[in-house]
Image (cartoon, rainbow, N blue to C red):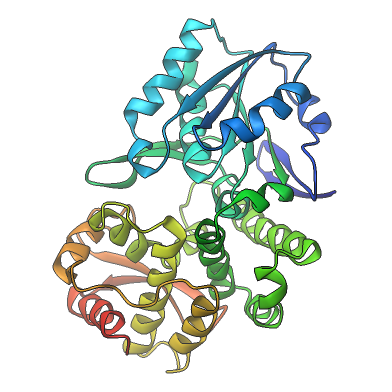
Length: 359
């Protein structure tokens, strides 16, 4: 077992990484709850709710199971959780436990932030993407028809409980999508992580226990350091959105046919292309991303049916747009990301089209 600590002003919580079990002992010591609401989805609930019920057997345990996929990351599912809390008499001293992937983590956190203006919750992420990103840092929310994560709140969990063995139940596509999210950390501020990734591609693909423990712990540590310095995304935390402005738009225009990590992988290639196009980075940066992304069967080329105009229209609703001007995360080199203001839509369009052509 390994523990990464996330420390922000007025709050500290552990990210507990276990190779083969759910170990809730430390989590329970941090909860004042008498009742627990386990929130999951229809895929994950049959696999993990029973063992977690056993871990929380000294509580009154209830369950709420939502539908699968981004189409269920909406206010209807959020309302469903709130209705379950109301029906079972949950008050401010009780807690929610999110058991699932990024969608479940985000929506459960938002329900916890909303119920009685904020109750405790715990993240138990079961997908790689959720373990390295969605469960850490307190961003919660749901999608709106106009775009991804447009409704939400910052609300930190009491703890994050990661069991690496859950990754063995993921379809290869879901596992690889998590890798798409992990690669972004190399681009932000960890160039040595890129080298480690390249050197350990086979071990990661084979889900070697030591490699996965290192991968997850390092990603959580990288994110914890950034969140510590900027919890509410007023500055440096925006760097965590590398590849995401493009990625969220691609998810939206494709009606979420792309998994989040797949769209982020495409977004990373576009961000690298734009960084080179605007003269911030050397020409090899884009290929560095392509080499690693393709190694995990992630997309680098966008089909023509998702038009450039549609993607740019979706990007206009991104939360980083200021006064109608595009703000994007770009790079000077691998591991040197920065916030770039007032990016022209012509340059953005050229980078989208370059990735469409596979240049």
